[in-house]
Length: 87
Image (tube, helix red, strand yellow):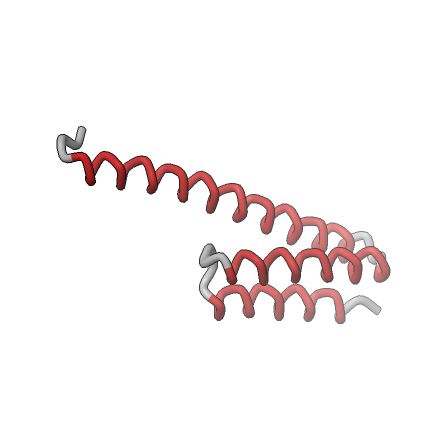
């Protein structure tokens, strides 16, 4: 356990940020799974709606610094490719 006041504060701040990032990452994963489920069900309209929601959530996570911008861009591109592949 830290003895210095600033070190104790860093521990608390790190815990807070970790919980926030975990929550955001979990929400992004859930939205990605919704897109994948709609694609698996071959439901183009639901997949496109889920893609819009997932893209928004991923972009917001990138803005908050949870994901690197290239990582977020790659996730969006893969989902878009998946949705566009539905016949």
